[in-house]
Image (cartoon, rainbow, N blue to C red; front, side):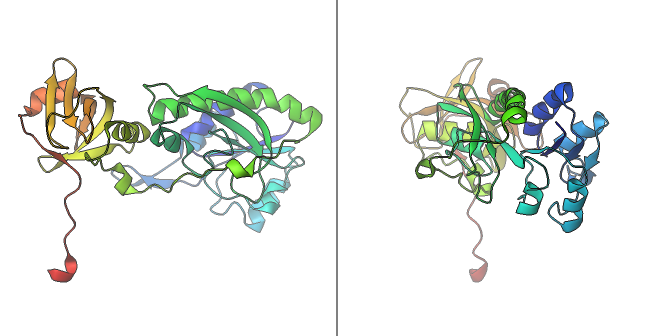
Length: 320
């Protein structure tokens, strides 16, 4: 089949890599370069960088739905448009620009966790099971007919990076299994049970702040959902400290929420939460690299009664 592949993030890379072995795309669609890093230099997104490294034809329009973009894509007379974390809405003219239409790789068991952050949402919810779904794109958000679906257990040690990586590999394998079926039978799927649909919550910077008045399991899930990037954090001695890995302990809190619980030799330290102690295993101090919590506390010399907190209160500009 003549394929067009669209994507942007690292999640899309394994699928494109797999396609190179069976049916290299006639075109790769990706997002334009954007400023990134401390110097804000224009940088290719991971999928575009991979495509470029493989010498694949790359198209990065500012507006993929513009008449000119659709005309260029339609002129290729492709059979199928495949999308994975592309990051932009594909309107009807674009979805219908190929013979079989457009399909999408989505890292959840649809109709659960529709939307842009299914991996984070599964971790935030404390789910024990997730998976990947390939469905036919239509006008509704992640609501098209399901073409293939496969489950994946969420491991206790999973964070966002590890879970997304495993889902990306699973999605790639599922896509390669599905392509011969689509070539033989066309894009024919089963309707989703829309009554069971759930949607990813919109995430913002406030979600990264650790509130120690929460339960230890809730904080653990928040840490997993944002590790390693952008990283959930607390304040210690007026500086941000990202918490990248942790584990709830059965011990009840030994002090008020946000206070240092205990130092666990060769492992890390605990912070008291509402219902239990949370063992901190990996951290990243402001302006430094990630490190084991045990090594960090040796350098920081944490003291009994040390306090961890959320963001300081914002100034009341109306009364200043």
